[in-house]
Amino acid sequence: MSGIQFKNVSKLYQQGENQVLALDEISLTVEQGEFIAVIGPSGSGKSTFLAIAGALLHPSKGEVILNGKNLNELKPKDLAQLRLEEIGFILQTSNLVPYLNVLEQLLVVKRMAGKLAKADKEYAKELLQSLGLAAKLGKLPEQLSGGERQRTAIARAFMNNPSIILADEPTASLDSKRAHEVVQLIANEAKTRNKAAIMVTHDERMLEYCDKVYQMEDGRLKHDDSNSYEKLKAISTKG
Amino acid sequence: MFLAIKELKHGKLRFLMIGVITVLIAWLVFILSGLGNGLSTLSAATFKNMDANYVTFEDGSRASMSRSLLSELLAEKLESQPNVSAASAMGATMGTVLNNSDSETNEKVDIAILGITPDSFLEPNVFDGKPLQANKPLEVIANETLKKKGFKIGDTLKIEGSLEKMKIVGFVKNETYNHLPAIFTTLDKWRSIQFAAPGSNKGIEKPVNAIMLQGENIDSEKLNQLFKNTETVTKSTAVQGMPGYKEENGTIMMMLAFLLAISAFVLGVFFYVLTLQKSNQFGILKAIGASNRFLGRAIVSQVFLLSFISIAAGILLTYGTALILPDEMPFSLDLKLVILYALLLLVISILSSLVSVRKITKIDPLQAIGRME
Image 1 (cartoon, rainbow over the protein chains, first blue to last red):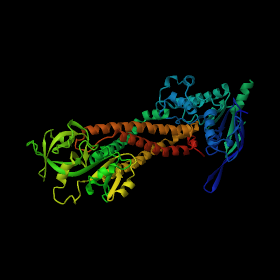
Image 2 (cartoon, rainbow over the protein chains, first blue to last red):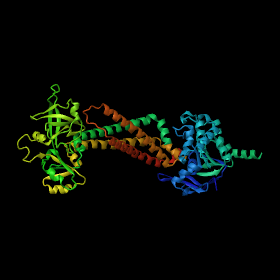
Image 3 (cartoon, each protein chain N blue to C red):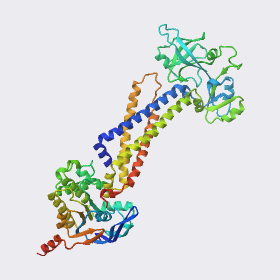
Image 4 (cartoon, rainbow over the protein chains, first blue to last red):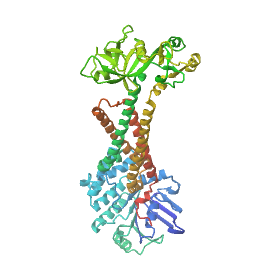
């Protein structure tokens, strides 16, 4: 099956003599075309969750199935390949390569995969145009505003047409207008191109775009159906 | 290559500084190699140039002309041995000459006087004037150094501390012996200079210092057994036996070896610090799917480019330096050696970058997430 599936995933950290349970028996399925949010206080295990979803961290127990592949069974080299091809990571604002311009930020992803074709360049340009960055192709990250950088990071995540989109606090350090635009973009991509999207956030303003909201607390994940936005959405779609 | 070039262009100052260090190291390596080459030429050019394969010395002389005394008559016997195609004797002595024809330049010149058989394989080709003739013992051919010092063809040389006089009839190129310009004369003339004092020839008939042999695969062991009191060695051993040759070369080689070792560490540390600085960046690239191979290649190609350009600049600077060095300075660049050291430096800098590559493989892409709980 496609999408991403967590089956009883736990993660234990050894801190000195103490063991910290960062994730506790998490089970979750995100289908293609679905956009979910994970919220929770800091220290609740959100980042660990995202790192495991992004094949950056191995769970201590349980399995993660990504597009039918069990991540536990893959070698580090294959995991890098999987991240490249199947996962689009949207990281926090500053995480662009400082010496590459906007267009090159996208092209480097193609170069990692092998050869850069002419069509890739066209695709990258189209992608940046659709994100309103057509005039900024030759600019370095230091010459961009926070919003522009974040949109570049989103374009980079979409570049390889991944089936899973993972966003790590994508609205941190953005004003609310930009924040709305950015999350809308992710929601739009998930819907129109049928991708599974997970956003980890503090920002409750953004939950209206999500299909489901999960609350993370002390390593436990629970579906927050009391979430007013979801209810509102349900009502509005009915009506 | 893509990341490598982009970053080189972006961080110009940083890479310029590393580049300058590499240029300076390369420059020094090439200058030392030129100096080493120049010194060894000065010390033993005549031996290196001569068209011989083996040299027969007196037993116990440890391949040194100055310690060896043999009879020229031995040459004929050696020539009849298997694999020996020709044998010819040589004698060497040091001296000081004055230009007797030109009263203006009364500067004294130190020279090496080499006695050879005219027209033998030991006689170098003259590029100006005419060669030696057996029936004209007063005539000599001299290295071009003397020409530069104002000597001309037809000039008479007066040897200090001796009544002997000689006339220059020709000039040869690149013939130095024991750090001195060589003058070639007949064996008889040489003997009259060298053994002027009665009894100094130890009673040997037609004494010479050594006999040079032509021929591949000569069985030196057999020759040593056959001819008592002789010791036959290869030409390269004979070159090593030149006074000061081993010591000079050893000193230069030691300096070069240290320099190369130091450069490996200096460059290695620089690249490593640069890599550490960028470890967060590499973490991000890994998180979005870059393999170790991709990032490792970026580093190595960057180091390759930087070193290649710097070493090329070092070569240019070295040839520039060679132009302004004074003539007397024993400096001669051998293109083969320059290429060899250039490649060696390139290999060293790439090897030193491998420490950084190893570091990259250990960078955890989790860094990109930034705030692990």
